[in-house]
Length: 318
Image 1: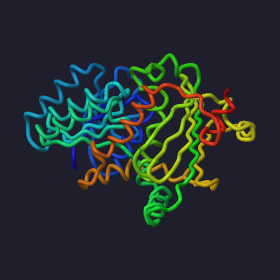
Image 2: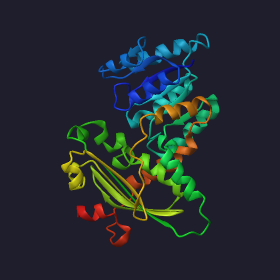
Image 3: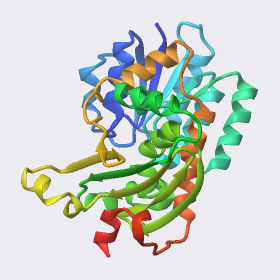
Image 4: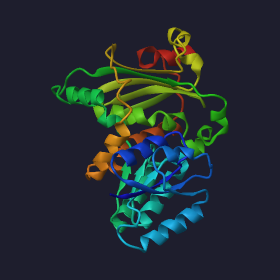
């Protein structure tokens, strides 16, 4: 049994980590969050030291480091806001623990090099939650694409992801680009990692739309041209789906054929944890492509392109 702690335990994604820690037979010894709405802990563990202040959390973990192997912290699960990921990873490595961090691992690609150096210095590991790489439908699609002969005609891919958010989003840290990385990083990085993992590295990129609640563009990958559109505005959800009360719309098509991967998400975090505990987790190098791409999208100028390289939903917003 390994000892875990968690940061950002009051956040949206934390319950998936709590479940993964419990379902892999491990123990949660400490939790950190400045917001004290953390009753969710009682669903999973009944003996957890909770801290609102990082300084007290730091002191408690440091005390455990000086005790026995059975008492020290082995893993820190990081569910804090994006801009804190880098600092919390560094903290984990310095106290002799491995870090398990939600996406994005960091906001800027150069931070990855610094973390790699710290990994080498401490002998600890940094793991990223890239759970779509374990989704059965995505794995099958990647296997099919990678089995195609070299020089095969490039695929034409459309990615559309719309997830409704209320006015609170803009007021929270998620609405601040310097803290969240903007929409392409905050909700798009899952899919950018998936696409590069399936179709290969980025050869060219254009951004056709960049707004606080919408973004879109085109990626030229090794094996595909990808038109992508992300939105937090429920008005962008297709009318038929809106009329059914749907607040999220997710679509991935290849050559006009829909790839179904809406189901099968429930236990993916637990599957990632099992891989990490077995020494096969996704590390810094696995995260590099998506972190770099999200950063480049954030910094790229908007190109008012047209024609078949522009996502239909981008055209519709103009």
